[in-house]
Image (cartoon, rainbow, N blue to C red; front, side):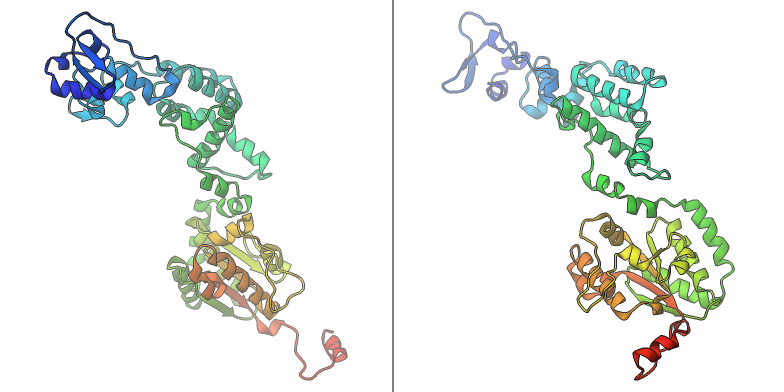
Length: 405
């Protein structure tokens, strides 16, 4: 009947003086041919079926057809002056048919001075469901920071990570997730409210990764200050290595470097400078060492076996115990650089095992990574071959044991 009404407005000039609800007073609808024709006798009262405000844009569409005269199509109904709106709700606002939602804004802001975040979120979903909010998105943008007041504390306890820091966008995602959970308890969803944002599952998965969060939780300003202090005291040889590694990271070249030098030549100093530089710009660095004492000298350092889940018994076909999609796998996927100190102390198969694992993990997202060393990740190895145990050619087990003393 509505589309036939559009056709009648285009055909009959007198029809353009009527709203849709007034149409039956001067026109008759013929259901067999689906057409309106001028009424020859009698009169009738028009009636539009009731639509609940929770129906969204259909509710505003019902308001519009009771106001607009001579509509020639759905776009005409949503046009005010020379502006055609994408949603009927916006057209209703432009026509002055809807009041603003300031009362609902105040209803949430006022109790925020004494209510908890959990209580405010329940109040928010009550307003959404029962109070016919005209613009849910505007209400959300006005009060989201109030609703997220206790989210950071909740996540710090949940992840057992007291130093966790969440940015505004991350707080929004977690708050939306809490709102969605409360709406589900009432058989509703954020999708039922036009304009309301939805939780981004990929963002939630990333910020829920406590291993990755720990690597991204460094104070960038503090790291930048540390980098500037270290960089100014570097000699030319160290700066040359520093520049090569940083260029490989920035260009995603995936180069493999080895820094060879005796103790005291500045290898750890170089690592610290590179780590500070990359962390100051939000990049992920994984610093490891073959020995626990060496790992303690690296900021955020771990032993290679601990970080990469290397098996204790190695073979030509060994793989690290890292499953695709796990928190550690996601950390490695996001890593821009891997630093491995005291590399000569590790067995050859240790690096082969890590190489095979990284190729497999990276190939899940980029098939070309399967043919790149360490899956295309930039690696900086370092150490001193003079610090490893001597190898006695053609020596017996007894001779090897004695050489350790």
